[in-house]
Image 1: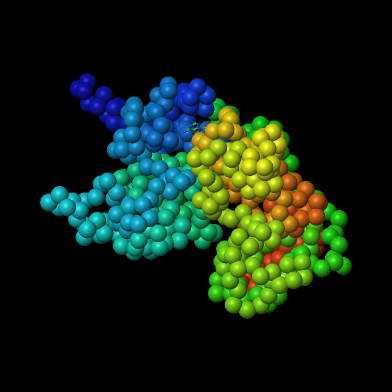
Image 2: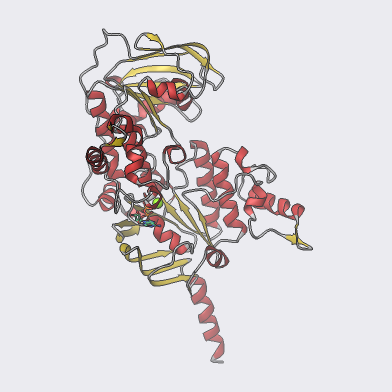
Amino acid sequence: MSERPSALDKRTKRTSAPAAEMRDIEKGFNGTPVLKGVDFTLARGEVHALAGGNGAGKSTLMKILQGVHRKDAGVIRIGGREVDFSSTADAEAAGVGMVFQEFSLVPTLSVARNIFLNHEPRRFRMIDDKAMIRRAGEILQGMGVDLDPRAEVRTLPTGYWQLTEIAKALALDAKVLIMDEPTASLTKTESEALFELIGRLKAQGVGIVYVSHRMEEVYRICDRITVLRDGGVVLSDAVADLSPEQIVAAIVGREVDALAWVERPAATKDTTPLLEVRNLTAANGVTDMSFTLHAGEILGLAGLMGSGRTELAKLIFGIDRPMSGEILLRGEPAGITNPRIAIAKGIALVPEDRRLQGLVLDHSVRENLLLPLLPGLNRGPLVDDRRGDGLAARLIERLQIKLVSANRPVRLLSGGNQQKVVLAKWLGRDPDLLILDEPTAGVDIGTKSEIIERIRELADSGKAVIVISSELAELLAVSDRVLVLRNGTVTDDLDRRDIDDEESLQLAIQGVRS
Ligand SMILES: Nc1ncnc2c1ncn2[C@@H]1O[C@H](COP(=O)(O)OP(=O)(O)OP(=O)(O)O)[C@@H](O)[C@H]1O
Ligand SMILES: [Mg+2]
């Protein structure tokens, strides 16, 4: 008699236990504490936002839960059972899957092979291709994703890489799924597909940790939020009970003003424009685009993904070549046939996928920051060390790059701080025309206004800036003029003063006329 209730107790206890529980987690790297007694509880079927400034410890906490790093102290329980992972394989076996901030796929292998990497279904010790492709297909179908499991990963748009990562976690029957800034590299449509998928997984009882810097996403898909600051929990509550201001204040540690537009004196337009684009058409989708840009002006490019924003930037910078039309620089045909010429003519482009293109990960932060500045710092064969140090220190301070020492490799920095290094290096270079593609993606809320301020300073000193951003609030805060692009062409050329609010810009982008 006495056995039955206790067995039942055990069972109910186990099923009601949280998907994952972390208690008093401590972690340091080479003596520097990064996590200082962190508690984190993930319920089943909940989407739990993990927020905090760049370098707060979000990725580190999740890498511990995933077995990438070992905790120094604390307790972890998965589904009520205490665990101590010493590898990602341990974590996977316990049902913890992770979609990394940096992709972990093998680009030259098929989607199916990636999904089952190291767990390939086998027959007679050989990989059973047929079974693998069938099962991969089933998983993708269950996710509502239309993707050929035989496709080679490197031929797919990044959105599908993400989905393949998720499929990989699901193939291991994950009960806990960690997503570290999953939408950072996704288009709007791809993000929508991801949100739908998250809803499905949630309904299946999967607990999801969602690391993000985007407040709209937190409100849209998350049930609870935990905010880390300097390695400690400063807030943990139901999202519905919190205002955005409360969340932002917890992340930054002080009140932050909403991004405000600062009207700047109009650039003198009676001079030759710095840049003039005339009837530009190219194979990349840009169609009959025309506009001008004067020195001292900040031009925002608004438009949906695929509207031609990034494609226009690539033409100006010489990555792609126009089929017809003209680009004039200071009144002369620009003659930019490759990026090296563009740079020589005073143009800089900070690309969207800057972590891949913009950094030498094994070099120090200092070297990365000073790389584009070296010609200016050369004194004989040696770089002027003192001036270099001063410059690097200034850039680090301005963008609040969190680091132990500027002489340590960039790869030791948190993801967002790596982004800041790339931005800082170009902002410090003072090109005549600076093109920034999604300058604040991955950067924390506390630093956004700093970046906008630095862009204004550049324009004030007579430089021209083109800003591409999907965040309309940011675009409206920084731009003097906004070009609206649709289907590869300019549909509106608006003075910032004539744009009432985000909503009216949104309507213009979608081509809805009021
Ligand atoms: N392998 C490592 N070696 C040394 N320091 C590290 C290592 N990994 C992370 N750190 C440090 O730990 C701190 C927290 O980094 P983490 O990546 O967890 O931040 P994060 O909250 O994910 O930030 P972001 O929003 O920028 O991604 C940072 O100061 C970082 O430099
Ligand atoms: Mg991170």
